[in-house]
Image 1 (cartoon, rainbow, N blue to C red):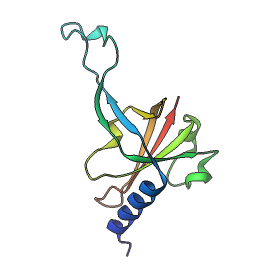
Image 2: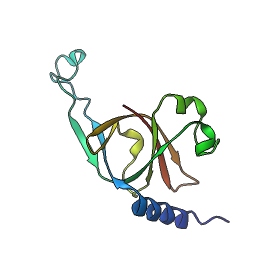
Image 3: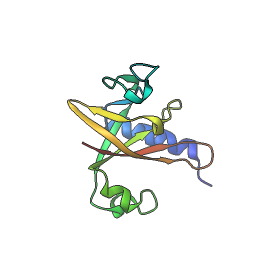
Image 4: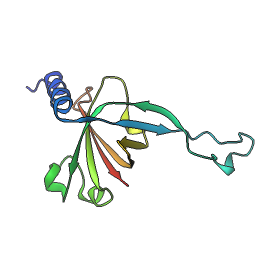
Amino acid sequence: MVDYVRSLALAQRLITANGRTVAVQKLSSTPADVNKPWEGTTLPTVATTVSPKAVFVPHTGAGDLGKYLVDEELLKRCDQVVLIAYDGTNDLGTFTQVQDGGSTWKIVWVRELKPGDLTILYAIGVSR
């Protein structure tokens, strides 16, 4: 039987040792004028930011990441895949962009490696 708690600890340890700190951000969807929500926001504002360690993985196809982790059609829509170990708190599936140094990456899709009830890793497809 696989010990998923050990798998989470291993993912956290490897990404912390080999990754770099990024800012994963959730943009606010609150309209500038609540009485006219159809006008949208004036400028996107950051509602939430978390700063995990991440590893960027360039890809060329589904074989790079394992054919069962990510669909090849999803890979066509992104430039890179970001791997982030679960921190025990934040659901990264609800975030919208990744700041890496001076680069802003739009989150295109998020896949969660979650055997049973324990989230271990997020694979996040990003594009510029």
